[in-house]
Image (tube, rainbow, N blue to C red; front, side, top):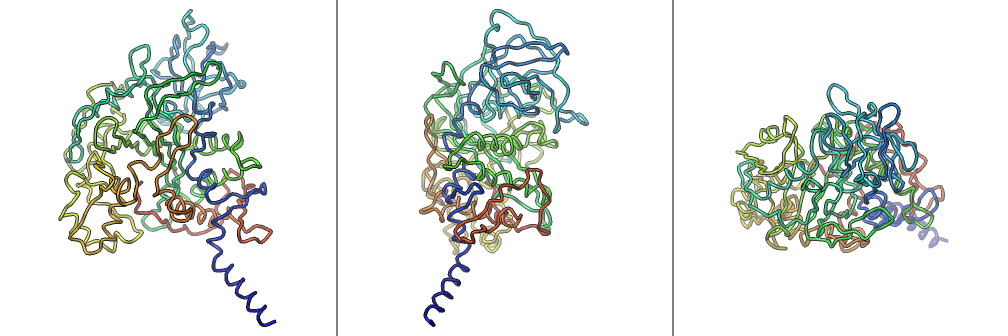
Length: 569
């Protein structure tokens, strides 16, 4: 009897002290299905399932079959295939001929759903001369039918296409092809940013289809979606730790392709061209300045796990939730009322070796030109030799500093940085926010080899040197993480992107995705979105999928402590 008592006590002790490890290995959906940690990575944190990133409705082009003027003077669009839009959803169209809307040079509007093939165009709501949330007035314009546009007339872009996301970053007076040319032309000339120079690359190598005006096509931009990424783990709080200042970021990762090629004849048109070693990542703010708003973001992402089919596979319920309840809330114009063009984009980053050796990362900000120049300490001369911006503040995608990455050509082996680190070892080793000296950061982050990182031979504590390198773009994408330049690999059509060892680790509990899952798990538990299964099984967890998406107030009174205050990317 004594031995049995000891055995029971040991089991109880084991379950209690290993509870956190066990619940991370398998989650229990409200439908009764089990979701392993690896599946949680795939379905909630870093989504790269071809059923999602190659979904025809959302990643393809839908030919516009008919444009008509309604009795109230509005414009109705009829598509060849179901458009998937609800009233209030964003629409971006391209290649449309014969449609004229006064004051508008591109076709980014809102939809008023009529049926699965038709919708009327509505304006974004304007308040105090700014685009804001809500639906505005009916779009009134003129449509002149011709023999050229009688049958099919341009495209409605899928909501997860490169072109749709880019269309929502533009002001209403911008011509899409000019906006794109303005973004890519600075690669071809030297940029001086914060006192540091870029090199010159050659964007003429891009196989970018042209539109009827010989401008870069928005609809047939040569890119393929690789992943949709949840980065709530990057959420930050104010200095007092009383309220959040954001809920991290939501991201879209693309790779460049060799032009735009499609063999589709009776379906949504998708890009089937071969992938190229050139990735682009759109990094959006997930706005949150209160516990309630932070909880809503955790709930939006975490609830994806409850929308899977009985076999754990992606279906329309999952896709609709990801589309309407998650990505729409950070990609649609009007979500970022106080930001340029009312768009929540924080930055766009590129990582490539296609235009020129070596591998190189750049960063771009959607900003007014002078506003960006004024934000730097060092001398800055931003040049865009091609492409015209029509707005007075010259809001466009301008070259900015690669955050937290000192100019590698100058500081790869620096006595100054070594001394700077020596004096701040405690800070660098903590979870408190810190950045390298702002004047050391320039417009490019070079990666000459897989062993590239910042070296500090004079520093006794090499663990601090490693943490510094991990914070930088150069170190994180090479030596400090064992990564071969890209975290998410370019892929062929209907193939799944590979991931770097840094993300997946040697096992499911050792990579960065495991840390992100742990942070999500803690937040979901703190906000009452997690509860022990009624079965009392320590290996499972209830997602609480019945919680309303109306964002009920948080049931905690204090803000959890952010765990990645010192992370930039």
